[in-house]
Each structure stands twice: as structure tokens, then as C-alpha cells.
Image (cartoon, rainbow, N blue to C red):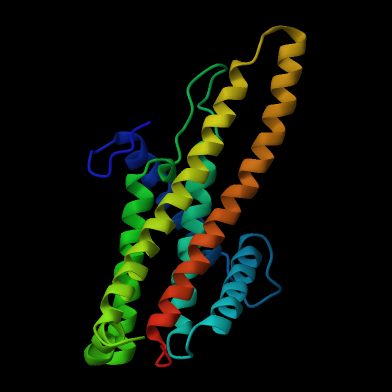
Length: 230
């Protein structure tokens, strides 16, 4: 596993493309099957997800920001769920290799967190104006000293987002791989199956939680930047 932020790696590149394709395909299927009748299948799932994120974001973000931010949050959440879970799947063939989650490589969560950081600053400039955004950076909570405080706070944010996501997904994958190296024989097979299944379920739950945490924190940071009260 490579911890580099700059070195190019093929596994997260390909699995990242697969993640994008799967989310895009699901959205396209749900849109094509949409009807005015009682929703079912993929349409029901998508409508429920949209309503859930609209309510969630509506409680956190300013009214002018909420509509667009809810769509961003839903897209981000779906992408992270697929990206996190895809590494829990083995390649075809017994004893073969494993697919690696793109979020199990530090460069992907870091790049994603950096992108969210830029969007958060954009929200501050758009909704406060350039002068208001600069004032919030330099003058609050104390003149000039606020610049140091705000700089540390703003820079810690993407770092914490990236490392929290990366660490949890990588740990889940490593432990799951370790369960395949337990002793052989009937006892070993049963133990591998039991422990592996439990850890797989646990990893899926953690993948969902980490995707939700990353999304909610992004929404919260962007809402704070866009609010005139901060």
C-alpha cells in the first residue's frame, strides 16, 4: 500500500473510474424509469435519498445554498459509499486477488478533501462577497490574530477529513485480507468464514458511516462559510 500523495497509482485510478460509472449508471437507470405513478425499485431508492438529503441539508445550510448543496451532498455520499465498499469485493476466482477501494489510497481522500476545501471557500466568497470572506478570515474572532486561528482551523479541516476516511477504509480492507490467511482445514475454513463474514458486515457499516461523516462535515463547513452569522 502506497501512502504517497503525489505518485500515480493504477488501482485507485481504475476503481475510481468504476465507482463513477456505477453511480452514473444507477442515476441514469433511476431517471429513465421515473414515472408519475407510485415509485418502485431504483426510482423509489433515489427519491428517498434525495428527500433525505434535502431535509438534512435544509436543517444545516442557508435557504439560498440548500438546494444546490443537497444535490452535491447526495452525489458525494453515493460516490463514497460505492468507493468504500468496492474494496470489500474479491476478484473472480477462488484465492485470487482483491479489488482495492480508491479511498484506501491516501491520494484519493486527500484530493477529494482538497476539492471540498476549495468549494467551501467558494461558498464563503459567493454568499459573503470577497470582502466579507476576507473579513471572516482576518478579523474574527480577533483582529489579525484571527488570521492565524482561522488558517489553522481551515487547514486542519481537509486533513482530518482525508485521514479519517483513508484510515478507516484501509484498516477495514487489511483486516479482511488477514482473515483469508487463517489455518486451513475444516476448523480453519469455518473460522475464516465466521470471522470474515462478521468483519465484512462490520466493514460495510463502517463504509456507510464514513461516507456519511465526510458528507455531513462538508455540508457543515460549507454552511458555516456561507452563513452571514459567521
